[in-house]
Length: 429
Image (cartoon, rainbow, N blue to C red; front, side):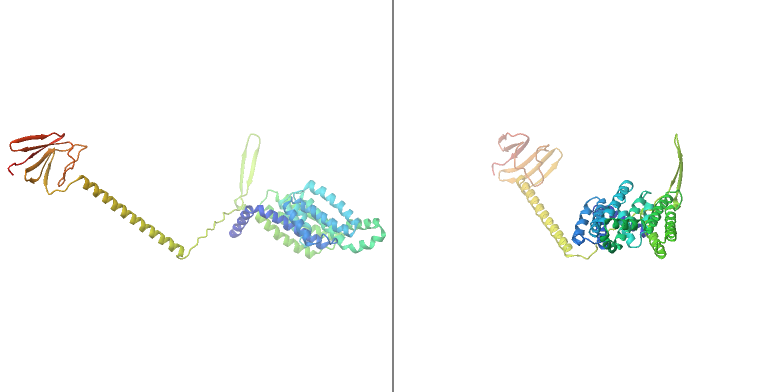
């Protein structure tokens, strides 16, 4: 049962998704079947009985309002009847006119009923039509069913009386009129079926609207039995020659068809019925709530699992090449940064074999000995904005340093700013 519910929900989604395409296709198929049935049963006018004409008319009906199918079918049948006899065409035209007045007045939305009823009568399974209309239609739908039954029997009578109508050409127009009218009014089977189908539609509608559990199932059973009973009583009273076996088999098929319709249209769970009572300032309300049987359709996700394809290999190789190229670029950039650092250090320092000491607040350093004497560098620690002198280096610039050279017997200073440097040399050397 769950699988059937899933299929139902999927079909509903499919129809809703492709409704814009399914409706024209449905109208095209309905028009095509209707016109082919008319040409197959009548076909007296060979010019319009050809398949290309039927195809063009069906294509037109697929894009026009659905009632246009009935109009085209009526005109096509009138053309065939006119080719047989003008008197037949006049009588059929008057009957069509009366039926159109009733149809467009009471049930203009039951177009498919007028189309399907003659087709189902030709297939000997017309009993599903009144049961279905009683479930999804209104009592006015009995007019549509009656019109379909009348059309089927009138066209069938004309087909059976074609030879007799041809023989009455010498007797004049009035003889043909009398023959046709007597034959149509004397068709007891047509009237019995019209009454049976109309009563079935109304009875099924009344029962399925009742406030009882399983109302639709009860309505189908009661409506089917009432239809069979009325047809059998009519056969006994008027000798309609309706096949009893055909009625029973047709009713069984109709019951199966209508149960499928109920499954798609009215599928409820009476076990979870709730009754609610509440009131307002003017009324008391007694509500019976019957939940529908619904199920969420699972979403199918297709995951493709396969081996390592050539595309995957190529992608991996490209990733490896990209990683190697990135590493090489990083190495080049690192080497360049190191070279720049070395160059900056070389420009700002000079190498020496001297040793020096560093104390807080004072820097004293022995640079080395020269022929002139011993050179000593002393000064205070540099503040922010000056270079600090580290071991083994000597600043190239003497900005901010005061340098003094002292020789035996000679004293002199070289004015600078900042740190004072004193040099002592031996002139004797």
